Amino acid sequence: MFPCKEKANFSTHTITLSKISIQLKEYIEISYKDSPKFRRFFVLVASSGEYLDISEFKTEKGRAIQFSKEWSFDGAPAEFQINIKLFCLKLRCKDKSIKKQKACTTFPLFYEDPLIREYVEKRVMESSFQLCAETTLNINNINQRIHRLTSRPDVYSNLGDNIKFHLTIK
Image (cartoon, rainbow, N blue to C red; front, side):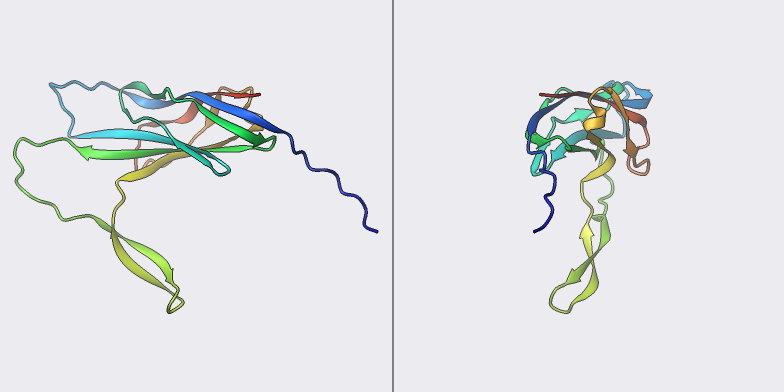
């Protein structure tokens, strides 16, 4: 006979994530007189297990990008993980006169071709949304209001190092 193993913790909880704010390094003021060459839009994706949800779109304005959406993760185990990813869409503002048409930007994609069982390269169009920051929250973040953010300055360089949030468990 085999020794008994400890019973797994099958209790589940409802985790609520809200009041997400990502500080900007520099204050951004948008005015219609001094229209910027580019405008950026941000969307936040939160996922845990098989659950994935997307926030509303936000623009860079003021000292922070603030999201009003509230995420509820029902049936989350005690050892939950919530992955948070911030994506950025950079759009060129309308020019008064369009003089040149640019070619589509492409980048190499490497994948394994199942027919020949080799890795091949294919040029594909660049994705519009690009990952610019991410972090993972867990049970240790319940009493915290701030957490380290891993950003990608090559995509968007004005993000601060931390994410502010409100995380509760029931």
